[in-house]
Length: 151
Length: 268
Ligand SMILES: Cc1cc2nc3c(=O)[nH]c(=O)nc-3n(C[C@H](O)[C@H](O)[C@H](O)COP(=O)(O)OP(=O)(O)OC[C@H]3O[C@@H](n4cnc5c(N)ncnc54)[C@H](O)[C@@H]3O)c2cc1C
Image 1: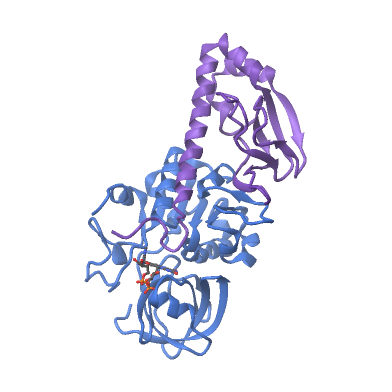
Image 2 (image 1 turned 90 degrees about the vertical axis):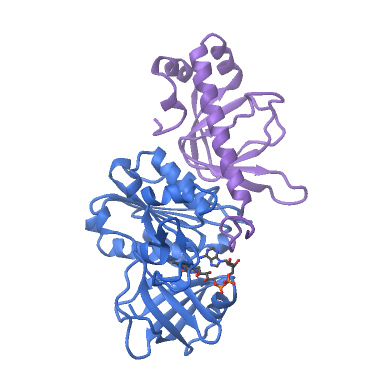
């Protein structure tokens, strides 16, 4: 299904139980998948296509801060309060994804500590990876020697 | 290799971005010995000074392409050259990309910003002899869509994959946004039989190499170009020393097994 990501990190029997909760969904290019500030009650794992994450800027077009692609997790704000999307998401190209209802998954996790652990490890890893990427981009690396002040 | 600069004439200039220009040079009389991808010339802007510049194109008639970004006095002078102007050239210097090492392998060419310039002739060499290698993947990171180099050529580089990602998209950009390593998920390669060629800012090189190691590439199959500032280019002045390496002579291209211990320390 995916080369990397969520499904490869969860032990098989637990994965099957999780997959029972997932459903295959499609979004055409340009579809808004969720809006900043709205309730974060779902998440997706992308099979194909790319999704742009954006921030609302008053009076301007939403500013895209990152795109995510096949095999990646879309949405983690459901994990902890306030369970609201802190970014918006829009399909850049036609997207196919597995969609999960966060409540159902959290309920399943209550009864399945191994799945709970594997899922959280994956989500934290994803957040860590995105944080590292964001910090790197703060440096404006490709600018003319923008990667720090001379000593 | 020559110690005295040979005169080369600018025959064409092509603006790539707001601060970057590709110049085509031809020898006025005698040509320098042949260049290879990844090697560099010391280009002398008369009356201003000399700068190391990678070869960005090796033409069959002995001409050379160099892509220069205006960073300071010398590079600004090179960007401002008009056809007919003459520069002094020494070279070729440095180690170059070891393409024969990658025979039969899938290839990952990973570039950040102006780092695409030294990788361009490598991509062209692979496209000219595709049977020598597996799949060619070119991964390009740029600050904004306006900072992309060689825009007209990139479509032809997807054999099978050429991905572009930017840090700051403008209006109308429908492509990827994020660090260049995120494109690795889309590239098509078998880690055990892959050689990577990486050039860009050092932080980007380190991040890319770590990701590649994590995916199972051997350190000596990750070739990186360390373009520390240099002066003499002949291994004498020590300006470009990085630990035990004199990068003008032992580099700029080195295997990551040699580069890693040097890049992870704060100061050498
Ligand atoms: C092997 C090699 C190949 C190169 N290939 C290219 C190329 O193909 N195209 C291109 O545009 N540039 C290339 N460069 C970088 C180029 O040589 C420098 O931008 C140039 O020498 C700067 O000189 P300047 O007089 O224009 O600016 P300066 O006034 O000397 O420098 C301007 C600023 O840039 C910093 N700087 C200078 N050189 C470097 C460097 N190498 N790394 C990090 N910071 C630096 C200085 O500290 C200063 O802050 C290469 C460098 C090396 C070592």
